Length: 249
Ligand code: 13P
Image (cartoon, rainbow, N blue to C red; front, side):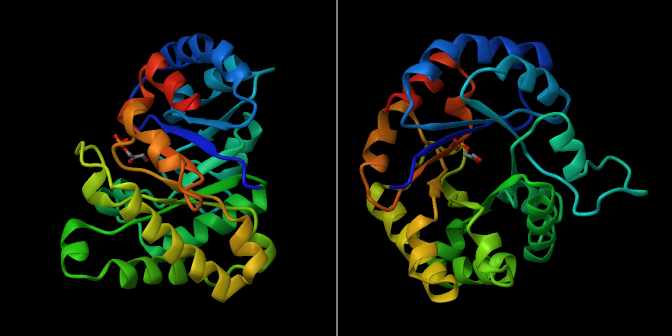
């Protein structure tokens, strides 16, 4: 039985004070949804305040990125140990916005996964195709390449610790959600890749989240599908009422 994850990716939104106030606002709801794992990813400067606000609750705090080295002359970067030291439990890796605007590649995704696992962080690894790739019929090829180059060299034990997120780029922030059929098809392709590389039980245990214009109105329909194990939510996670509705979907 895979416990669904409802993960909020706040991207470049919310100060430390705003993050703490949000967590306070959803605290009561978070106690009522014991069958959901709750993960919130604020921006770096808000992580510590979020960890403190979430103390004693079921809410776990994630970073949105990390560097793969433990320390060194990497101006502007943050290491895995710095994240665990303040109480983060998760880290998002390979988000399409990092790939598009900041030169993230499958190679850096791989290094970041290793660094996160070494520090005991749960990586939430993002994959997904562009609209052009989908329209050219290349979705499967693109996902396979991202999966193989980003995760293929992990050990089965390492692979067993990560969460995968399927985020079709054409659905992110566009209001154009993948239908449950489209999402389910991609999830089952990814689960087959996991089975082929890491075995049936690893694939069966793998949680694959869907991300891309998830809203309270469409989330339940996605979650109904056997192969969809939660959501990685941007815009609709920014308002406490909307996020609380997602938790209860
Ligand atoms: P939206 O929910 O705003 O489409 O963003 C999805 C996303 O990128 C989550 O990581």
